[in-house]
Length: 298
Image (cartoon, rainbow, N blue to C red; front, side, top):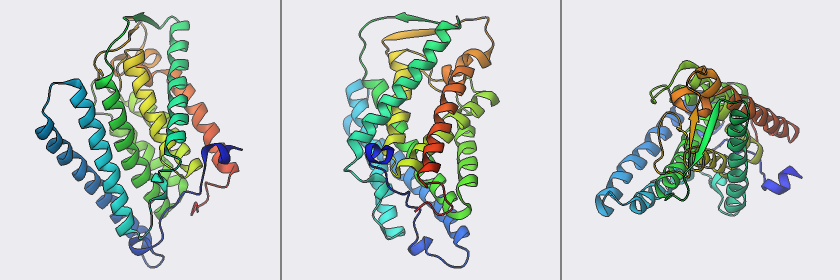
């Protein structure tokens, strides 16, 4: 039933050209991982700058177009690298199931964050002040960009190729830790915040990728979580504001950081940790039941 709803397929790790079986495949997989991260980032960064130079800056609608265009450039770069470097079609980005899986992921991500903020409000740790209508261009563009680019790099490249090199356990552990550590430079970041990101998003989003064999559900969850956090509820997203919002979520000043998330935002709160880890464990269990966590996945 789950496979039917999510149009799931086995996760394709790649087994041709640079990843063909043979001597030192684990080392070739690691080298290819580093190259892919560099090349996807290289296409995304200069691509964004070129679009900004052409369209200009200032108008939030143009900013939205720029963010979405950058995400599309990153998707195209990844698809081309897989096609020519691994001699396969990038099934993880198959367009057919994209819309339903993005919608499913978006619904899950929004509901999860609503549960987190509901718990925090019920516990007296936050209050939410509703401000009314606000333009969503800035927050929407940032959420889509982060959902696409971060999922491509962390899940489709790092998790997948570590899985190819060392198996699923090492892949989940290392990719999650790297994802958490990448947030340490953000405003308001702490070691606890980075661990929360690693356990919440690093494991959960990887689990959706393993379960479905596609990247779309993970992108939907990631983008919707950020959008709900930054725009619907007006909280900090990994320490940063996302511009105009429908509301403003205010943490109780005398509450400890581990309870509210502090300046980093609610995602580094105990409530978020419990909600996201519970979902992550459930999805991992579903992936295990579906036979998607074997050493070679496909």
